Length: 543
Image (tube, rainbow, N blue to C red; front, side, top):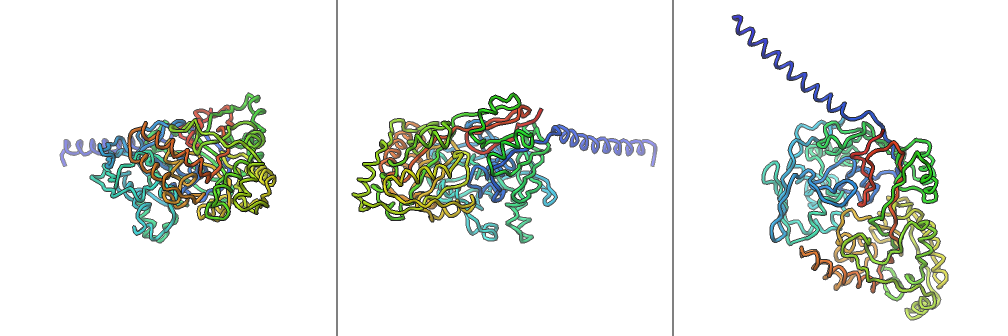
């Protein structure tokens, strides 16, 4: 080999070494860019899994969707404004039936000890995610059958005609008919995108359920481990496509169901964030210079649902009697320490189309007894009232239940209070085992249809999991017409009419619009209360 050839070969080797070193340096810089900080969050409940498509509650969304995954469209942190997510842009046909999404390139799925991705995110992952939820016959769904309650509650399984990949970075959804809130539903936690490659690996190995307990996403944090009923550990994602949003190298969820203990841990710096504080503790933390207390009107409503398939709750006179016996102001004062508003309509006052003209029937025990007599129950009856563990929208459900029990006793109603662990509670409620139950909703999207067409207040015609199991042809017609027009003024008019019918039929008693509260250590930076529920740690850091 002559000297010039040898020099050329050496130059190639040198260039190659420089290139490889630059790759490692860039990787090191990316990892080093995440500050070496650990934040601990006092979390209320144990997770029921980490598959965001299955999640039904705000804590479940927090542990999965908000931390581990992304969606095609995202809500801006701390607000309700839509912004691009895994889709950089999208087009909507004039008839509102075709949605075309142009996907972001260069997005990496998490690399973990149990999965190493061989490709970046693409259209295959979008197809897998939505086909799994809408098609019970697809192989992965058959191997791991489960319910996708929120996806079905939104009617997405029925409205989507087909989903197709036009190329690796373009996906098209075709609907049977126009659905105004469709694209908002794609920003909901349950529309988080999962890895098709990882699912195929699990299916081949015969362990499809691990998609829920060993999750893989594209989000700002990577799942490490879950110690049952104790701790969830995440680490910052060094390859996140929005690197400035990852300001923590370690994120720990300390599972602490007792609100008093959560506040003790916060004061002892065993955790730095609490989002469901004990309300009686807030004034002391407001006076403490080491903490910041955040609050804002909540996008929520707590309520009491009557199972209208159980006698005598099928009689509207009975429901009205129970409703007008409840002292809502006393509940606001004692359960919420005054940090809530009396709820009247079946949606938050923050939601566009909220009917400000609605009024509650005045509390009247004498009239309530007269209604019971008219309905054939002059001596009252016995009812089971279900109450859940503490929720973000209800700081003391047990006290609320006891107060309602006392109110109903005054009109001759005997009440048995029933409670279950949260996962069992919601499972049984979904299947209508209750007589009446205390629950609530935090809207995951700023859309009237989620309130009026969902499980909380919707009918069984539109929602198999309706908590009240009520039905109304006129109500359903108004909701259907509202979802099929893109005109906001017309939609508002229709939703306003629907709220009036709801109030007349009284399948549910709205009780309170709670204030959202959070207490954080002063060293925490970038934390914002999410009006749509899940606690979000992207962009959050520590001094």
